[in-house]
Image (cartoon, rainbow, N blue to C red; front, top):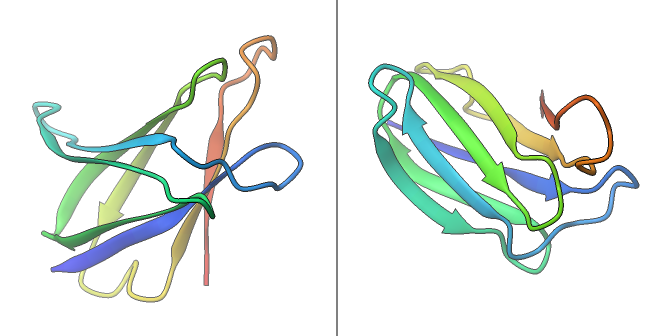
Length: 100
């Protein structure tokens, strides 16, 4: 089992607090857990089993982020998701990257 953690931020790189971050299974789209980002935009899901998941992030007034995540034995061991939220007025949706 691994932790899946990261930060939610805006296009300018500022942390977004109180974002709803939800973890779903990829197959069946079953909700595993849902949390709210802290004052630094940080979130963490503890003890996530290996497998394919999807993180969905929602912030009022912004386009939702929908990010596939493959949790493997070492893939996310020292990586953090950086989820950048975009305005609903922009044609493309939010995106995420994993940084070491």
